[in-house]
Image (cartoon, rainbow, N blue to C red; front, side, top):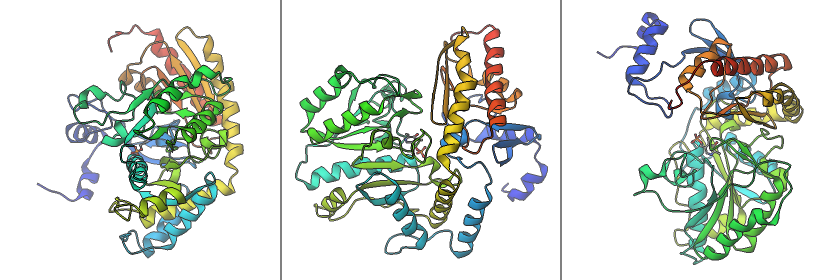
Length: 446
Ligand SMILES: *Cc1c(COP(=O)(O)O)cnc(C)c1O
């Protein structure tokens, strides 16, 4: 029997909630066959999540790069409340509104020069689909209908829809499962690791030979600039990015910068492309764009690309999501930009950077730690063996921290507003959980 949600709220204990969740609700990349229990969160405030049983956890994940200003921020809440009173949503076909226009203008002003046309979508993966379609439609409008393939770097992550999945790392992204339906693109080795690593000419050889050989069928190079996120938490040098961007120009291939994880300051620059002074032809934004409140994304491109697409066979760009430029999301995105401007995000990120280095680098001495790397407000501890997530998750929660490792990567990208005291608690909790985990014997097959 269908019941009112209030009814459930009054009768459900945390245990019942977890049991129903396991029975009916799918979680990200999760099994539904005896799924591990999820932690019920009752509320979130500042840098802390409060579980249903009252336990507080310091949040090291910023809800996957998003909640840069912390949770429940009064300025973001006020912007949403005000917008709800005007309109939560209205279709975008033939209609426009102040939140969308204001946001577009602000994004154009803050992103690298040349990006002047903004397409709003509802999630990062869709922004990537839009970027790929823009590149293909651009070349089509130029009469270069063979330019339909992409080139990308291994260890990438661009989202879970089909177009995006086809440029994710083929191994991590389990391309073999979808071999029959995924478009086949060109993959080159990821750039060598290290933000400060000096560039050697051989580092660009594979990209150059691929561009040279396939330029007539290549529409774009798509990559995550400087920081490869979910595909391996790897950092590479601005010099490589700059050289890659130059090669794209030389071989008449567009550059798509997927800044969905890196955008809005996370890497220490407002956009990761800024480290290399690179203006991509197309840029994808998402995640932190609404300060962690709502699903929203944007794809920006140049006037040349937008105009050319619009003069092509279709006379328009062939995409238009139902919730395009959702006013509520635009309003809170504007409020999030207010906070970035007002709070000196750069000082916050630099402060976190120093503290993360200080807290995490000593872990390099531990036998189960393979590497420690820190860039901007991102700290990564790479361990020697892939961790058993269910096991280590509980140890992390027992230490009072919310960190969600994958494989050998135990990493944090905290809200920018985290105090030095809380950051120390977070890092110490994470390292203590790792110590506990690696003290116990493990079945290496798990
Ligand atoms: C998260 C992410 C995406 C996908 O965004 P969703 O909102 O999850 O669809 C795409 N690219 C990068 C670099 C990301 O980090």
